[in-house]
Image (cartoon, rainbow, N blue to C red; front, side, top):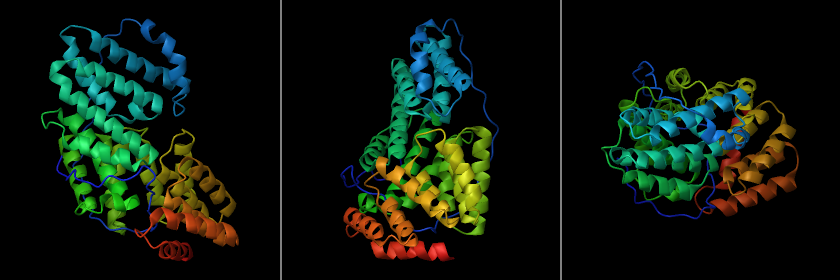
Length: 373
């Protein structure tokens, strides 16, 4: 990893501090490559996983029953192949690593747990021990991104910095892409956590570019870079980000991060109705990242659906009560709804969470300016 892992430890209640609706970055165009086909190991029997099937399907709400069954079958195939002491085991390891980096393999807590199980099996193969560790770090970063856990992001980045460069390129690319998104989330939402880190967003760009160069077929790398390019905020950046995210969806059609980026693009292009339609596709799967709810509330505010925005924020704050950006948006919605008491309450909670990192009143004023423009 090319970033400095010496980052100040912060409490797990550190808030999100994304408050603005325009950012700066640098548009980058990727080289497109064809999708590589995964090798398929032999399938003998699903008896070993039949007892787990019902539980796994319940934990994967983003798939219909048939989809969950196919995902469960894929996990079972790979687990069985990795346990075999045959020459095909090496090929199965390559398939397992490619599958583990796909969105389907970590689209729910249940899927992430099964993916970590694949990591354990990979670790038992001496030549894949470094690959297994890199995968574990990537999945841990994904979990922290999902929950908005600053300490988890910091721990994952520190672990990533110690991963051997001899790990499989595709696995390293997955880990780097997750590291890029982790740095970006910390820089935007947890600035105090990276106060001693020089140019965290530039480092995030570097990680995303490296991930894409290592694995041009990896959707996660395209998504990581697209989200950073979009921070620039101009029309050229939006065009470049859209090209990246469209490619990501070609590579991995079910990638929620790609769909979220398209929703962000729609919102930036003053089409909140389309943004909400895309967000709805994500939230019906369950387990959306906190940024999804923040964008949803902003898009609802843009359509003057203030009651809907309040309901969205109430639901989000139940899961992420210490995220200041949600409180700031809630304060804006409350003021627009003429509920000054609620506005003051959310404003004070955001101020208590942020301390000196962000001027809350300036942040609220910026949101109002964006609403009226």
